[in-house]
Amino acid sequence: MLEPREASTLTARPREESMDLKRFAIFTGKVTAAQVTTYFLAGVVFYQLLTKDFYTGPNPIFAAFMRTEAEPALWSHVVRWFLPAQILRGVLIAAVLYPLLDTLKVWSFGKRFLLIASLYLVFGFWAAAVAAPGTIEGMVYMRPFITPYAHLAVQPEIILQGLGLAAIVAGAMVEAPAKA
Image (cartoon, rainbow, N blue to C red; front, side):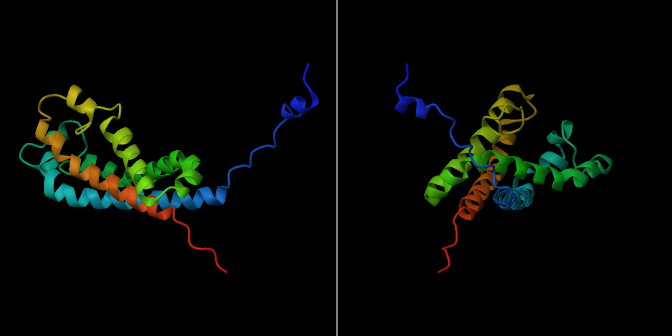
């Protein structure tokens, strides 16, 4: 038999507050803007510096399994879907981070940055369950024409993008001081 004091602890707890859609939309907008911007900038820089020959050079090894600008009919699909795909990625990243937002906001910038960068780079790239250049799965399952050099050459782009995204998102979690 329960004592009256114990019985009161079994009563229904107040329902948790529903998600603040305005707060979620603002957070999602910030994360999405960071995703689109850093993805584009890292891609532009490192495409020119390191990976262009994999797409269009004398031996375009990525063209064996990707749409490239060397084939305009196929490339038009990339041009059409590039921005919507990156917006969707931003929304998905925000949806995963949002439940942690209140916890992350009390952490220091460095701790937030480290967690977000780690989630993006480790789960989203290196340890992703997809065989792509630069991933662990890619190094195991891709054909030998995707050389160790190709796996290494894509690393700076993904690392810079992940660190940039993490820095912007971690910084965006700092709230402005309350007005007096």
